[in-house]
Length: 284
Image (cartoon, rainbow, N blue to C red; front, side, top):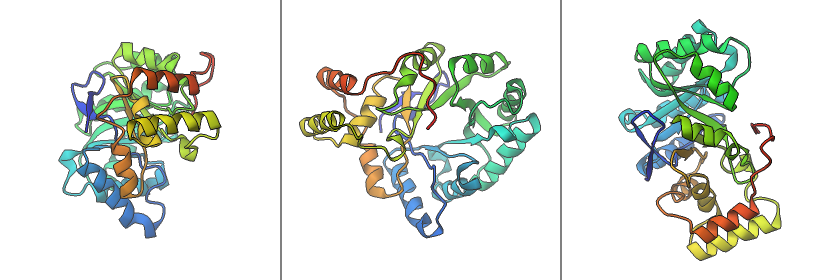
């Protein structure tokens, strides 16, 4: 699996990882979901993302099962809810996540979104404590605007924000106007969640579907592979699609390790334009 340098961490991470939103919710599906995640690990998709919010911890438990005996292979990420993100609450939430994941440390711990529940300085201080105490290697945020990123970084003393995880797919390219350029300048990795628009793929618009189908026919790739390759076309941008079946995991893995032509890129740019810079950050 192709890798990028993950911000300024000094660590290389697979371009295509695995998301786990809505996984672990149905006991009858858990065996297949564990197999899907393990298939991804076998394919080098070792960037594994979850959150305490997902299924009220059930997703973290599922991930713990999937990585049992393979923890050293995994770049493991989870998130604290804003409602838990006081100084003490952040530390307690991290410890609870570690128990559910059956590990003694994370690779990356994120504040799930900015909400104002607690001062950002309090949350950032707790995240720094977790690094110092060995509970996580790196810290970051999710769904942050540029102003929120600046405010969070200014609160840190010894650490840097490693990444900003944001909604990013062909139909939602608003981060390219301001957030992506800022993160690239600041050495902050950008991680695209819901790269298939939370079930809205393929797109409804006929000309968009036809563009994807035409490029797919010319390249021998699938529309999903093309979408993932487009989103991760620039160094420092990663994607974490969710796939609950091994065959879908294998297809997602095909989104890395090759390049779109300049003509293909231009056609995708035209079919899926960037919205005006004033467009609010998309979270759904």
